[in-house]
Length: 263
Image (tube, rainbow, N blue to C red; front, side):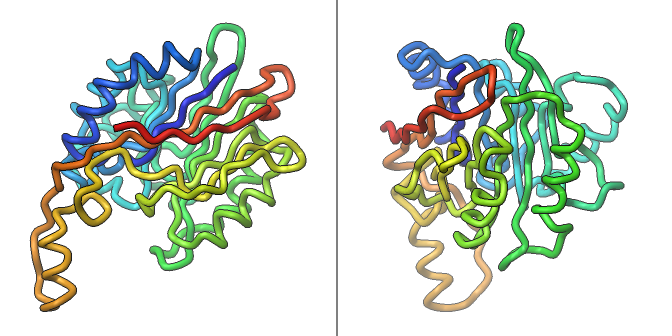
């Protein structure tokens, strides 16, 4: 089984390049399962139900998110309207599983590709981020219930040390631990000794002629003056960042992980 994980899709530029490049990537790499972090799909802040549906129409199977999941009120209504509705589309939009249990939405999705069951877990870090439940122990609790061998974890976190620690903690227990959130791709992709593919941050899918997706003049001005400013997405130098993971579908162990950056 070959899995594609697309890094944080930022605004219209990110959505457009996914639409343009995804079919070719899927064909050229023999992709069977597509996961994407979509929490910045709505102009860089949050995701709406309509945008989630647009991404699903591009053959993305599961959308993970992070700290911007609640930025658009519509997504809360989307989750609440479909509570208990089995494996419908909203079930495939995740929010971090270590948020309080009574919050709307779900932190794990279990599905199948052909005869191969899989699971996707969404977690959020705690260092330099809002206080939430322990992502390490939350992972333990979820893995105790999941039957699938192919398990991909999106660790949406600020601190590199927290992401790397989770990679080591879950080595051999999941197929991949993929870091998201910082919008800056790292060059440390590898398969850990017990068979878990790992990268600290897959990077942003969006405009690189800016500051982590935002128009550079606005961010530089905020640093200089310290005044409130409305951030707007940049538009230039759009790139798609992703990783391709080759997996033994019987054992769930990763064979390889390859980093992609496409303009």
